[in-house]
Amino acid sequence: MAEEKQQEQANEDRKAVFKIPNTALLAIAFLVVCVTPVAFGDVPYLQWLYLFPIALAVFVIRTRTTATANGLEVRTMFGRRDLPWSSLKGLAITDKAKVQAVLKDETKIPLPAVRTRHLPVISLVSAGHMADPSGLTDDVAKAPEKTEGSGE
Image (cartoon, rainbow, N blue to C red; front, side, top):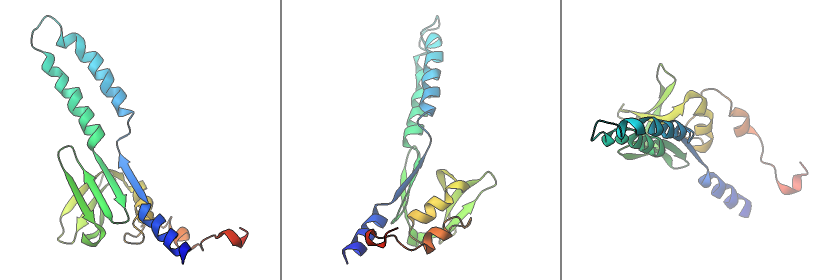
């Protein structure tokens, strides 16, 4: 009985975060270095040029998709939306290998930073709510659980 509770707790704790890599902040820092001579050059009042790197940094830090056992959380630069698995009809793939969540009313919501290669991970985290179209996780779902006393 205790092992079942531990397994349920482990399934609830599963979480996958898909976001823009933090190394993108290095490019933004380089942009700040490049903007500095122009902003403080001979033409006055060009310090507003720093708004572009700041906006890009906020975009990189905020934009993400989080998959949990309860559903998807989609964060964009200006908003956040929770999508429980029960409200989803499925996932759609665009021409550029981006993934969209399709709600039951046929509304499509883009999932930032999620690509087709991430679908097996979403399938594992969803605990069976979303099927893996690639079939990579079929063996994981059918494999018997290893226990301490099994000797494996």
